[in-house]
Amino acid sequence: MINNFADRLIEQIRKKESAVVAGLDPTWEGIPEKIRHSASSVSDAVFEYNRRLIDALYDIVPAVKPQLAYYELLGLEGLSAYHQTVRYAKSKGLLVIADGKRNDIGSTSEAYAKAFLDINNCVDNFSVTRSAADALTVNPYLGIDGIAPFCDECNKNGAGIFVLVKTSNPSSGQLQDIKTEDGTILYERVASLVAEWGEDLIGKSGYSFVGAVVGATYPDQAKALRRLMPRTIILVPGYGAQGGSADTAAVNFNDDGLGAIVNASRSVMHAYKSPKWAEKYTADTFDLAARSEAIAMTNAINEAVARKLEAKK
Amino acid sequence: MINNFADRLIEQIRKKESAVVAGLDPTWEGIPEKIRHSASSVSDAVFEYNRRLIDALYDIVPAVKPQLAYYELLGLEGLSAYHQTVRYAKSKGLLVIADGKRNDIGSTSEAYAKAFLDINNCVDNFSVTRSAADALTVNPYLGIDGIAPFCDECNKNGAGIFVLVKTSNPSSGQLQDIKTEDGTILYERVASLVAEWGEDLIGKSGYSFVGAVVGATYPDQAKALRRLMPRTIILVPGYGAQGGSADTAAVNFNDDGLGAIVNASRSVMHAYKSPKWAEKYTADTFDLAARSEAIAMTNAINEAVARKLEAKK
Image 1 (cartoon, each protein chain N blue to C red):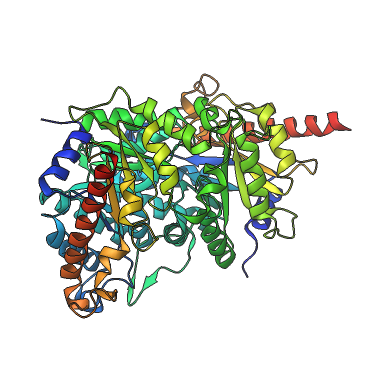
Image 2: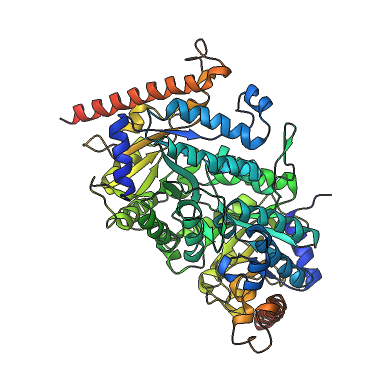
């Protein structure tokens, strides 16, 4: 039975008592030497790295987020590891959010939607090598034409999308913060569109499978955005390496303690290198360090959300 | 010797006396049955289709534009055909514009930039299977952080980018036409940014390797955009199947008769199906039909540009 992606995600969040998404962004240099040197191929090295992270994290986080760019950088071998990773993560009960920020005109968005979310991978008598993720990040710049084909595909496959609203990078304001004629900010206009695009696609949980991306680095903006998109699940990047904290991430949660997931990539994957964990872990135990950091991050976010709800009472 | 991409493109446009870019957007259903049925794999079928199009077009058009979505849809097999296509097109003297509309925060944009434009594909002792295109389409929504890494990579490899400004699809106005506080339209603000981002990256031809995408379906907007980006090469999609004509495309050209390239995908690839060519060609001669259509389109655009320049005198 196929459920609404929002319901599936919230089920996992409740089960694992965590709103943390672990980024799986393997750079070649970031993979411990021992794994690189003993692997027979680039694909094997990347998958072995991800497999160890997944084994260390699958029971404590609801979802992983592979960033497509890092797999594409490693060519077909990298993408082969991506597809293996998607399959493996799903087999361990994790939801997979493919971070591709794809978008195009309607007919092309349809191709992207099927490429990343369609569980059927047969053409004529051939099967093609790809694995459907549970959700995909998408860019809003082309308007509804570029979004609707993703929603159609999500409906067929129980998948979801996260639409970029306010990104975590320093120059995100160059376009996103432009003030419009009616006094609203561009990112607010995009947020209103995201709420509109998703309003008929709400699951039993009360949340829509059309989510949004709002960076943890812009908490003031996030407050306004939360109000504009009450039934939207917000994917919050920018925690850790980019400077976002548990408190700046907590702003994105609703009063039900739900409605947001917080991603960390480098701070989890490379936790063993941080002063916080360097005494306890080495490159050989990068996966255990990632687990410790993911647990610490989960606790920090749960506490920050609890503080926020307490303060509201 | 590596040249500025803008110079390389203009050299090809002059040599071939054509500003037509042929889209290479293979859908499985769009590949003639004979090719599909005799191929031993999806990859072989897609590459054979593209190879025949390239053989029919390489001496008459300056560039081809494979749309990544259609290759990704066909999994690793599709992407294998993409890389073969890039290499083959380049070997025939064509420039390759990868249409991926990629973008992300800085560190991730760097990975995308290398994935699509870096001619070096070795990691440690492994080589990875990918082919550098000459240019990539990119999305501006994240501001300069998401663009600068592409410019750096272009500088290293003599490559270029085309930044989405005003797209050809019906709902492009939903965001792009929003009026801003100072009375300008969002797409104008993006155009000004594109001109600014590219101003120090101008080649001997007087054009920058930071190009722009402006749909042929919005000629009124294109007039204003041409003025805002005088040294920008404009990639004009939307000709043919999407409704753009030679005259609406001609608006994007400068008074030197240069400064724009016009893409057609379906109307060239599937020319044999159109009433215009159906008497002369069949699925077996789809490549010759594509050549005839590309020549007709080249002539139509050259004439429309000449008319426009004549009218200005």
